Amino acid sequence: MTAIGVFTHIGNKEFRDFIQNLKINANTPIPLHLLYQSPFSTTFKPEIKIENVPFKTRYEFGMYLAQLFERIPRNALMKNEELWNWLVLYYIEQLIPINSQGKREMGEIARYVYNPRYTKYYLHLVAATWDIYTRLGTDSKLFLMTPLNKINKFFRELAARQNMISNKNLIRTVQLLYLEEMKDGKEGIKKGAYSRKKQGNLYRFIAVMNQLDTNYDLYAMKPENLLNLLPAEFDVWKPQKETRRRSILSRITQ
Image 1 (cartoon, rainbow, N blue to C red):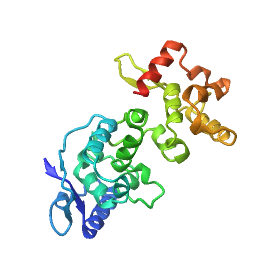
Image 2: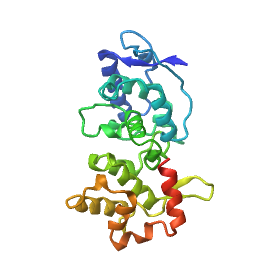
Image 3: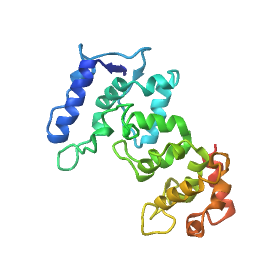
Image 4: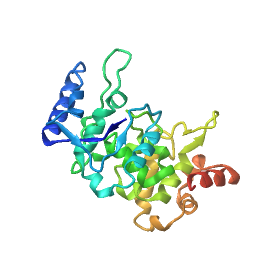
């Protein structure tokens, strides 16, 4: 285990330059010295120990981060880009893994370089994982069941909309519609949930909720009430049996 660090101004600039270079040249060397050497980084205060262990999903990662920072004020963490960028470099082998062709798989820069003033801050693979998990707890599974380096459509579409991601009852409604129990007992996303060709898909749900928001107080409505407001095209997605509906509701509200 090692003490969590934060980049200095110099270290943060070096890290941003590295990510830009890696985007252009997948063979760019990983500057691990930035994590521990002066003048690039210092120890985070209060001192917190961290371990570079593999995580199967962003949900597991979010749970771990929440435990690490449980005593740190939320606002202080949200503003600390030097911390989140340091953590990206620390977990870089999981966040930008090497593919079968021997090259690192990179997405957009916003996934790795955190900027609290940037409109796409919610894409950051570390900060946003912590943010969504600490906001929603077990309700964040729908967004965080991917590997650490992936962002699913639910995350991309709903996390960008504060009126939705901040509404826990709406998020539970989304889970009732699109989350199902798989054969292995684990939870997964129903087939076709993202398909624009299928009625009642995620994008239609967003559009309908935006329409309903003009006439209803969606924050005050329970998942059952929100389900009842949906047009018939969503019937195919609704839990078909009352016992199944209650089972899901019980699990996601624990």
